Image (cartoon, rainbow, N blue to C red; front, side, top):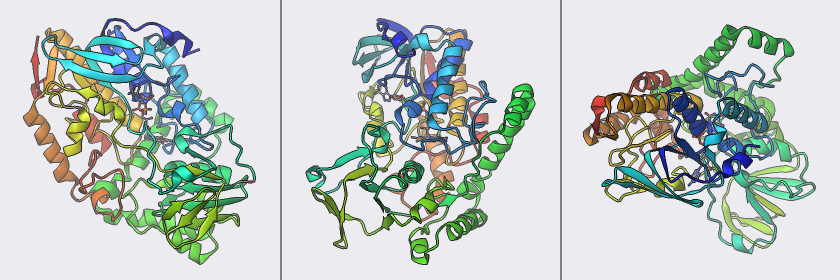
Amino acid sequence: MTSSRSDRPLPEHTHIAVLGAGFGGIGLTIKLREAGFDDIVVLDRADDLGGTWQANTYPGCACDVPSQLYSYSFAPNPSWSRTYGKQPEILAYLRTVAERHDVVRHLRLRTELLDARWDEAAALWRIETSRGPLTADYFISAAGIFAEAKYPELPGLESFRGRTFHSLHWDHDHDLTGERVAVIGTGASAVQFIPEIQPKVEALTVFQRSAPWIVPRLDRPTLGLERRLLRHLPLAQKAVRGTWYSLIEGFGLVGFVDNRFRHPYELLGRIQLRRQIRDPRLRATLTPDYMIGCKRAIFSDAYLPALDKDNVEVVTEGIAEVGPHAIVTRGGAEIPVDTIIFGTGFTTIPTAFDRIVGRDGRSIADLYARRPQTYLGAAVAGFPNFFCTLGPFGAAGNQSAVYMIESQVAYIVDALKTLRASGQRRVEVRENVQDAFVDEMRRRSADTVWLTGGCESYYTTPDGGNAGLYPSWSFEYRRRTRRFDIESYEVSA
Ligand SMILES: Cc1cc2nc3c(=O)[nH]c(=O)nc-3n(C[C@H](O)[C@H](O)[C@H](O)COP(=O)(O)OP(=O)(O)OC[C@H]3O[C@@H](n4cnc5c(N)ncnc54)[C@H](O)[C@@H]3O)c2cc1C
């Protein structure tokens, strides 16, 4: 239903063009409409709204932050079926919210952004899409941070005769029953799908580069009584959300306060490992060699028991090459394989950033290639009338992304309201304000566990800097983005 209504033609001009129809783009459109803006077009290349939650359909796909918190504060859902909603339920939630708030008529799906350029003379954005051009007074990117699959370079992969796919493009037509399957990578997605496929396959070889910290997930179905209570007592629902928020925010003690706070969390991980893995050698293989929190810790009760099964082998020695029917390890072992599944995560700079070009002809990707640069993760100097959600230093290491997105949405909507009220049209963050912010981020990141915890991750840049996490409490970030600080911007009519 959603997609059929989005085949409407693109207008020649819109007041606000939004890129992306995930949590970011949908939340933004709802709040813009509430503020009285209605001339909004939301572009997304996908067939449906939902972003992450329509793209990832692998078995076991679910959120890692409890759903009572991983949802919009303005659209609470008393009916989550379990602590952590699974992908179909999260997608259904987003569809319901979008329909209830009349967002659907703003969507232009199957519409890929090809190029967006600021035209200084006309003071507007010229946007090229796969379904034609349009112009916009304001352009807001909610293109996400995990939108494209990342693949490892494996010599000989092109000679492989079996099936290969990435967790982001799960091949549901391919039956893994009785197959010899190799999984490359042990990140958050692999941890979710491995327990789902392990019972089906004849043999599962998991190629692990570094062992993730696995901590108890505490997932369970929601009782009917709880749902009734949450439905009739909104305060109870707020209390549940607040409790999860505080528990998760507490992990910031490890992240950016003092990494000695990691010990109780690491103990939890070690106890779980000891209880769920019988073989001491496998336990050693699965023991992380870096501090918890350096990469995002993963919540799972099912992953380690799956690895403990007799049809599973964990290989750490790396891949030398892939042949037509086997993977050869660096140690020379030849492992016969029918299907290779990449659980290797996502590229961190979305390709959309190559296609958004500011007033001096440089793209956002060009800018970030030197170092991540934004103001509050929501504006970029050199890019007038442009804002974004989850930009560098606007993402949280531990907290729900939806919480951070809502902070950015409030800031951006306040910006557009402030401009409208003051009769100004052009807005661009001052370069010195952005530089001071980036310096502050660099200074405050130096002692974080992300940089000192002894791991490599998408939290860091190739030169070991912070790639874009806000290095402090998310409630501090919320306070900073509560109001649009017009004095930090050059504005004109
Ligand atoms: C499997 C998985 C589980 C996750 N679990 C959690 C969790 O538990 N907690 C948490 O906080 N975060 C989680 N995340 C992170 C998650 O991405 C964010 O929470 C959130 O969904 C981001 O929303 P978004 O709207 O910013 O981006 P997205 O949901 O990624 O949406 C971006 C949209 O932009 C569109 N787009 C991008 N480029 C173009 C282009 N050139 N042209 C047209 N359209 C384009 C994409 O098609 C996409 O629909 C998870 C991510 C994954 C992949």
